[in-house]
Image (cartoon, rainbow, N blue to C red):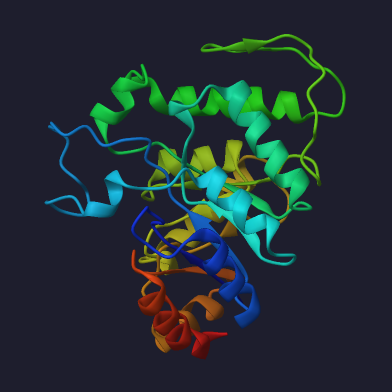
Length: 274
């Protein structure tokens, strides 16, 4: 099972280049980064992880710039977002960022997609909360149009693009897309319809949920198996053994939002799982 990591990289933590070097040299498989453009200081939305909201949420580095630094100093380390708030991006610009990062990294990028939880943050981007899921689906479809080999037009409910010359292309075609969110019939159906798999936060309850996801996958006429990548996991030997028994091939371990010394100690501890 591949062992990747995630961290809230901020202006106060270990820097991307140093972390990427350490991960690749130690044999970790990947680095996933989260995203928040900003956190409005006045907020009615309760934080799902509890209040007060941890300091790092308002200090996150731009994930694509940080992953670009990581890509430049590594050869094997896989790169991903966990997650990209697609509704908060212009899809044409985002498609270019993703294609460029995947091209320059040699096809190492995974796009983790989420709907978000912060109503106020999304509103500052002009996102109507009630329609954000449909907006994400539409923007993914538009981006895939721009990643297609031949110029292709797209007309959707929220956006459109003319048949265009759009290069570079992602190195291996459209990058892998993993959809995050809490399990439920709507989410599982959306994964089967629009993504390559699921990015479940924490990885709890998978024994019960995986059969339902596989049924949704089959009902959508999808071949093979959906990727399931437990995300932001606090590891124990028993937990990782359970994931292996379920047939999972990748897990993403949570690193603390800390400086270099603490991160290196944590990597030393996590090395037992490699």
